[in-house]
Image 1 (cartoon, rainbow, N blue to C red):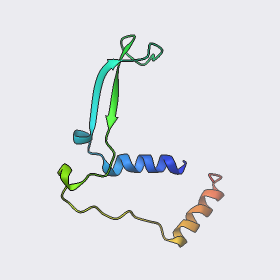
Image 2: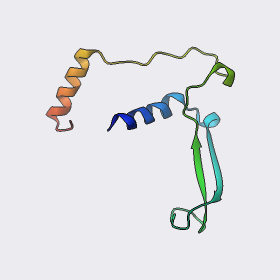
Image 3: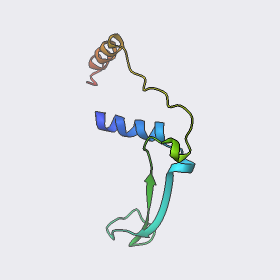
Image 4: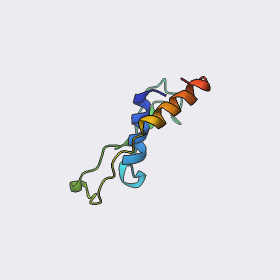
Length: 86
């Protein structure tokens, strides 16, 4: 998985409360979108995965991002190579 995907999924997991940060809308869709239930009409999912600020009602302290020690990173990289995953 590339770094961009990891950052994306981290943001979703760390910064999103589904009840507060997700919205589903229904409206026009591309007629070539075959996932819609009605041709030309579909839904969209919006997710606010940004870090929340005190002005948005979040008052608890934000924990630091956990980082692997250099020794663990070397070990994990070796395990991934051994498994043919890197």
